[in-house]
Length: 216
Image (cartoon, rainbow, N blue to C red):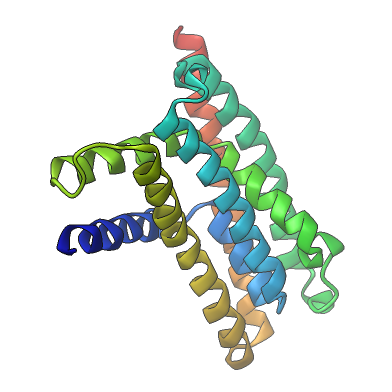
């Protein structure tokens, strides 16, 4: 009974921690929550979760080995970088439109679009495959499971996914309530900085992909 509990806690914790570093998904979640659109922010989180679980399935059950190819991963990063540049510019424009702060675009409010954006951002990061593989190695090496059967693999995906989605949901809820106690000017500055973070992140992805493609 003790080992299954440790397996569940460790898998959930690894998923939760993996979602903490600031990235494009977190920025999109924060943008919607600070604009007062909690449901849209949560849909971004669910979209990202869907992509993460897809990569988890690939990693654990080996459905698409071709994604281990460096050039294929480089193309993912290149496309993702271009997409994130667009999002970064959009967020910055929202931050500059201080006088129209409450009149946010339909893209920010729409829950379906939010889900697709969350999925699109997360699917451009096939490195999540490595996270799932690393997590699998950790629980096996610690002796929490002797091997990954289909049942254990599904449990690992569900617990890890629950951890991954818990952090952005917690972030969205926290920022949504904080919005009531901070000025719109501060939120505007946060939007500007968030857009810059997105653009810097996109530059990193593009450079990384070009290094791989040109190097080969």
